[in-house]
Image 1 (cartoon, rainbow, N blue to C red):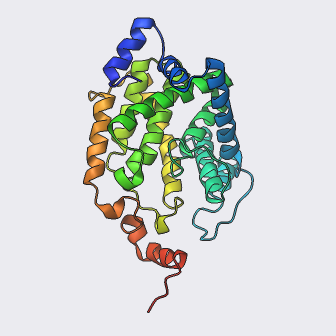
Image 2: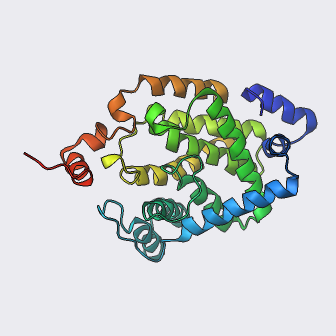
Image 3: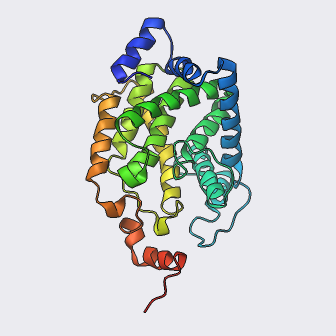
Length: 293
């Protein structure tokens, strides 16, 4: 993959191709696969994403600490029975994000894209768009390939680890990858996809990573649901012609720098932020079997 947004756009313009074409060329060469073999692997990932995004829409799991139980079903029921403030589409997408988070909490099969803590965002974005627009698997494969290219640039200049960069690095990265994927899936240009990814990261710059008891459940599940919303609004902005004056690679560099400035208590240590509240610490003590004096 190329190093900067400018290089990606120039390469795509030169050969009249998309980000997903660049990624497919690079990955098949690096992994010594044919294009069909690569796409078959991605189809397998898409099936996992589909399964996790639908897993708890009609049923509820019960977790030990009951921090995120039943959110997916509640949201899905809400959009069926009510007139949501946002829209039925967006509420169902959030329900899908909750579903993957709940599947993860119950040791189900998920695709960490890019991390387990942010694993609800990509499936919800892709599958909600599939339902809304009747997209076929080939379009979703192109979306996932696009997200890989965006992730490669993030990995080059920043991090996906909440312990190193906060939740901006996890849910922020997943949302940026999803936003770019959505733009390409809906016929946008590589430049628009990169603008969408930039806007998405800008929206959550500095977001703390403060999971209660160190479990990627609470508040992670809310950030998966809001992360899907972030990817949708950022994609819409880019498709409307709105641009980020700071190129995507520079936005990633800024995210990396901000991550290093975050205090260690809000970098996945389970000590600060919501994890540091009285309730958070009580759950942590129970989880670690710490007895009070």
